[in-house]
Every structure is written in C-alpha cells, then in structure tokens.
Image (cartoon, rainbow, N blue to C red; front, top):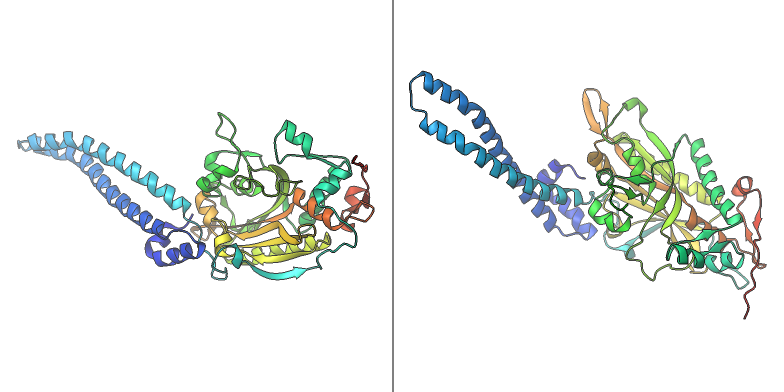
Length: 427
C-alpha cells in the first residue's frame, strides 16, 4: 500500500494517478476524511487515557489537603464509559480507513500511457509471425488429435477448464519447467518451491485482497487459500523480516502450481489449455534496495526475453496502459506470444515493478546504517507452462500433424518431435 504520509501531504499526485488508472479520485478524499477523523479521535483517546492516569493522583492530593473530591470522583467514574465509547468509534473508523487505504492502487509510473488496454504500447517485436502453407490446427485440436490432451474427461471429473496431459506432452511440460529453472539458476537466482496455500493475512500483504478474492479458491472451514501465483507466496517469505543490506538483492525463482477461478472470463478461451483453473508457472521474484529496482526490472525482463528467444517463439514486448495495469505494480510490461490460429499475440508473461507497495503491507525491511527502510519488490513470469505448451505446439506443428520441439528443450525431453498417437475421427 501507499505511504499514508504521501497521501496526506501530496493528495494531488495520488489523485492524478487514480485518474490515469481510471479509478475514482473521490476515494482519496474519503480516505483523507476518515484519516482526519481517526487522528482527531486518537488524540482525544490519548488525552482521556492520560487524564485517567492522572486523576487518581489528584484525588490523593485533594484528600491530603482536606479538599472536596466529589467532582474528581464523578469525573473518574465518567472517564471509562467515555473512553470505551471513543475507543469503539476509533476502532470502527480505523477499520474503514485501513480497508480503503489498502485498496488504493500504487502510484502509476510517469512512463505508463494513460487509458485502457487499447492504449497499450508495443515496444518491440521478435521473430516473424508463423504462417502455414497447409491447413493448420489450434493447439487444442492438434493435441487431442494426437491423444496428448483430454479436456472432455477432465470436465466430467473436475469441471470446465481442467485437463489431462498425456504421453510426451507431460514430458514437454516438465522440460519447459526444467529449462526455465536451469536458466535462472545460471543467472544466480535461488530456486524455491513455496506452499500452495496461504492465510488471508499473508495474501493481503501481497495485494488488495478485496479485488483478488473472486479469482482464487478458498479451502472450506480453513483460513487458507490456494495460491493464484507463486508471487504471493514468494513475497511472504520475508514477511515481518529485516533483510541484511549486504544480502540484497535477493533473487528467487519459484516453481509452483497455480489455481485460479478465472471469474469473469465465461465464454473466453474455453478450448484447450490457454486459460485454465490449474497450471504450472516458474516465477522470478526480487527483493532489492530501492535505488536498484529499475535495474532489477530490466534484468528480469531481459531474462524472459532471452528464454522466449531460445524457445523460438514469435513474440512482442508491450507496456501496459494505466487502465490495464493491476493495482499493485507501478509499471507492467507484458510479453505476448504469437498464436497463428488466432492470428494475434496473447499474453505469456508479465514483468512488474511494485516499488515498496508490497513490502509496506508485509513489513519487509532492510537496515541502512541506523535506519530501517522498506525494500522494493519485483516479479516476472519466467514460464507459464500450459500457455507456453499451447504456443509452442501451434507454432511448431508440421503438415503431417507432428510437433517440432525447440532445440533448447531436447536435452530435457529426450526427443526432437512429438508424434503422439494419431486419432482418426469417424465422419
């Protein structure tokens, strides 16, 4: 979340960011009013508590001096009820204040275009979009025709947007994961596999929970949620910790399964494994000194670009407009792969700088001299495997219905081509 001092002292800056994102600027005024009421009440409560502690002294002094203590006794009896009333009120106001405060998005970076997704800006393209001289198939039809994917049976046992990967497709999935992990390990990232469930309080340290709650699964009768991305679990690793400055930057490569409801996407990408409820992802996550965060941003962006180039995927680099940027990052750059059957680019990875937005929520600091300061956090998808499988298969299919494997994966798959078991459908 944002520094409350920034909101108090520079509301114009925060409102300009809200406006650029397409969020109501009135929320800032509401928060400031609640904050003002909270501070005034807090001052009154502090005075009452101080008076409560002092009045006993005054009663004793009055007794010694033979003075009347009736008024002091009356006041002493009134203080507890008055204090309780104000404490309840301050608790109520503070709850509203904190909820609204935590929901305010990060300040959008000056380099980010204003507007909605239509204002996203393409920075660079890599590779030429794949064109076929034969009748090609989308990844779903292609993989099912080779008996490598079964979404029909998965929908019977689990529901829509689930799948069974089969045969060599399982090896391809693991090959992509191992390729990404080895790549990042060579870049001095520490490999880590986090918990797949987190408590609500911990999730709130990574994001405004109210805006993300509808996208994740809750464990019934437990204060646990299945993670929608390893980012949140990796951020949680240093919750309430002080990282020695000499250890910065901390660079993590997390591998996890991810679980999302994909609420609000009904009727979109229902075929295949592009948009599913369960998938694997290798995530880059960094804790760093504030002075180094944009340098680290360039590093993790470069890593994903390099991986996609090795996988020989036609892709483009796109800076998201303010209205298309999530609440947590100050800036996000997406990497979009080419999907020939859709004749368009689709998101494969997102690179985000969150500044101190997450570390303030999670209380993650480092010591610089005698001062404790908040670290900056950054994240970037290295590989989301199911989407990558879909992209690789669509771009590397052959006329005879097989799938060529990118050379960088050969040592992990043990084969250069997926032939599968061709299923001929009866007319």
